[in-house]
Image 1 (tube, one colour):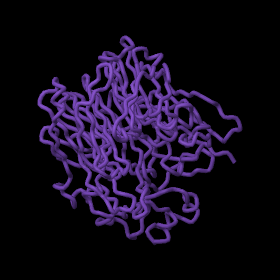
Image 2: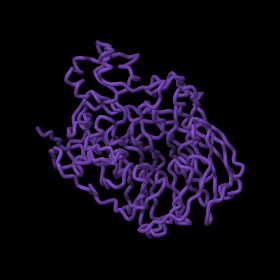
Image 3: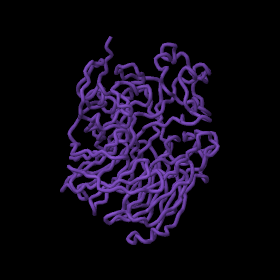
Image 4: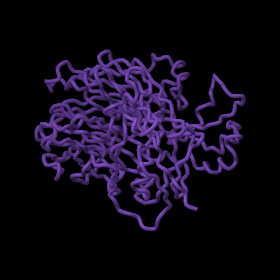
Length: 532
């Protein structure tokens, strides 16, 4: 029997659909709107994270190897690799300010203290300073004023948990952004988490995975900085939280828990079963957001933070994991069997769920101690949070998977990493998996660009108006005025979007046209899109 999926009114899509797997598979590309137009693609060694230098019209690209690749973007329709520079470590991130280029460098044993290398680019890269900063330096970014370089020190443990360094945010500072030679002796500070209210944060919902206590469980992943360089927000992916950094004080001042999506509610359906069919349903599941990439923007003097809610099970270590299965939770007597019947447990048998969360721990509100819900990793969505309060403003809920099912059902929740078109393969494992997000303004519009890692493709969300963003509470589509998905572009030849770079029209090599540059990790391709 064919299983059907109907597009919910909350998605603002007008038609329903019913899909069963077909024999022929379309090669694509597929598109939902018309905001993105691909201009060119170039194959590289790395093709993950890129940074743009407007004065030279060049891109610097890294991707975990000991090399920085340089791409000439003076003609966005014909990008060309012009050079590569060897670096003394595995380059995990790159950032640009003026004529300066900085890269974070991981050791082969990633838990060890890594380095940041600061270089100046004229016609080639010249090293100015190299700094040993912290354990596992990952994403890094210059502040907009150019006076500081912020580095996410992830501090992941060794495979056997024998080593578990503290995470933090490394801050390299100079007094004058216009003097490159000052980066020969920048001041280094590492902002740590050891002065936080541990008990209060855990009670509020900040997760503490691992075997070495709360502080060592905090692992910074990604950083976004306010336009005035005063504040930075840092994603703590495994902890399902965001930290707020006072940049001038070099101090972490707040940590916000990010909560979950309740997949039992209308408008929050998902396909949680990898059975070769598309079937969006409500389940007694709570999807932990656990964002990887984040971005920020301001409306007036108020800041908002966008989160790409990928999900992050801790299952890379032999010594500890927070991953279990529905059947194991049932065998441990932790589930309400009136909700989780044998039939439902069998349906969800391949779903990875968390064993860390306890049902209403410390504040039980139902008669039984057994849970009427489970926690899944990732919410398959993008969210907007208040940058000061940490409160949720908006969430895309089921939008991405609904649209993918509509425009490219053969590629619905496929695993693009393996480059085999097996639709629905990832439905029981984080689904479309939003990996990264950036934000940019085009004319009078503000767009969020979201990369969906495993299913690939770029979703474009219009976030111009966020004040009326609760799509689950309006009476009809005509009443809705909040964020909405306006485009989704998927070319199966470009697989695994990792880094997403927006180039505004006033800095673009294409006259008066904004660009989007996406690094595809799996296919090792860098694609340039025109944005309209």
